[in-house]
Amino acid sequence: MGNADLRSLATLRDVPFADLEGSVVAVDAHNWLYRYLTTTVKWTSDEKYTTGEGVEVANLIGVVQGLPKFFEHDITPVFVFDGGVTDLKSEEVADRREAREKAEERKQAAEERGDAIEAARLSAQTQRLTDTIQETTRDLLDILDVPWYDAPAEGEAQAAHQNAVGDADYVGSEDYDTLLFGAPRTLRGLTSKGDPELMDLDATLADLDLTREQLIDAAMLCGTDFNAGISGIGPKTALKEIRAHGDLWGVLEARDEHIEHAERVREFFRNPPVRDDYTDEYDLDIDPDVEAARAFVTEEWEVDAGEVERGFERIEESLVQTGLDRWT
Image (cartoon, rainbow, N blue to C red; front, side, top):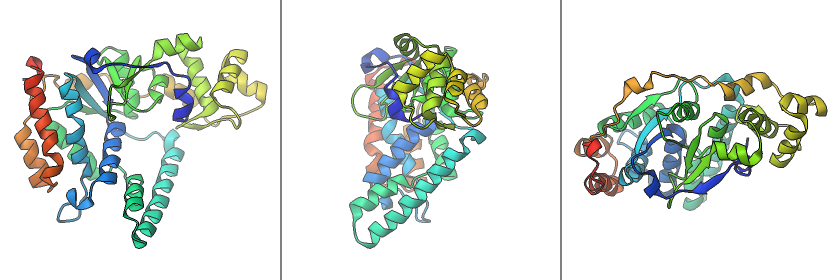
């Protein structure tokens, strides 16, 4: 389901960071990291984050610039990384790969004509989370003692589960699909300036007068990352149809339509693959080794020190200013 579609259905409100102090946030790691990665690539010269051997690690700049927001507001992040990609998402993955390839072609054309601004914009669109980016991100989080673990499948589904069972106060993600995966409370805008936006599942269902299963059905009619929607159905029509016919099957029968793998997609949202042993893998008492992190980023991976120094300073300052006894 397109972000605009679910946004028009979700109940959202701004929440001040002051209200989030002391909370634990299960962060959709790929979603968070990708946003910082693309922003870094778009606005930073590539020599600032490229090693002498030509390996790009713009992610390290993104992580150092993004983590202080949690520390400064006494929020403990737990980063949840994607596991294996479900075959239901293969078409979406293929579409994204094709989009990256087209952006790469346009970027090369922009470079040839000397349009540096357009080339930078397109370079951000070609980014993917390489094995090196995945590994170095985890290594840096370890050095900074920031909790993380791997999900069996979708990271946002696992983060939603962690929130639902009470092991996290919120999910941190820009994706609206956390609603469909059953996350009670999602924070959006953690990578943006200003206060974040709270997306509340119970309030959404109450405002729409739907069950979670009916919300999933409405989303599937519009289209999700795991299925194509029905032509001509947007969020308003989807709600109308679900209310008129009760559920997805009633709508499909009434309209003589078909959604491929509908039962599997529906069940995937209702009961995605998750794990319950994740708390064995981390400790919420964070004690960052900032000097070791500096050396890892600037010496081992040759990132320009000027690009990350302010981020490290903010981390150090936050540990003093917030008086985080539980972190030290």
